[in-house]
Length: 185
Image 1 (cartoon, rainbow, N blue to C red):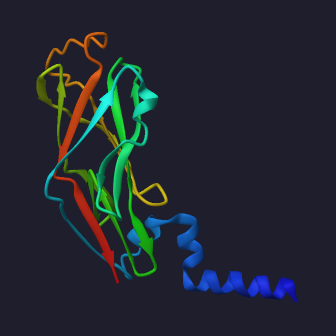
Image 2 (image 1 turned 60 degrees about the vertical axis):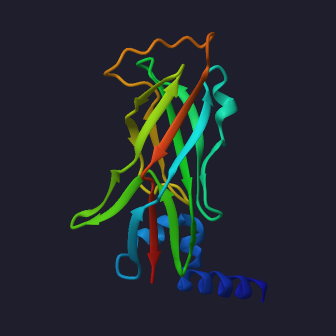
């Protein structure tokens, strides 16, 4: 009897779509072009986070954006193989069988050949009283259960910036033109 009961529950969850949603997350909604319409639009405002270059681990989890349902936070700060400082952000949204939302640095758009993600963010950094534009280093699709990730070089490649962490280790990153993605039935 117990095996039949468990089997019935699993079958019900699978047929309803809850099992797939529970296992795979927001991508189930985003990939269902027949069942869900997506609307995307820019989020008003400028959002900032201060990053300590002398202690990379202390930055993990710092919140850049939070509207009560969607968040963007620092995933990690690191130096890549080219000695470039980078910050990676993770977005975290909501999803259910009714739909999903996520605020991201990328617009996840449907195309004839599938999906694409387009960087829409305007990004600047302030370091030792200098303000400059920073550029994307990477981004992902909706590969995570509740969102995506996107990263920036912390210092521009087209401008000489003297990085003296002993003098000042704090860099402030400001992002604007974040994108709200809203999938509804």
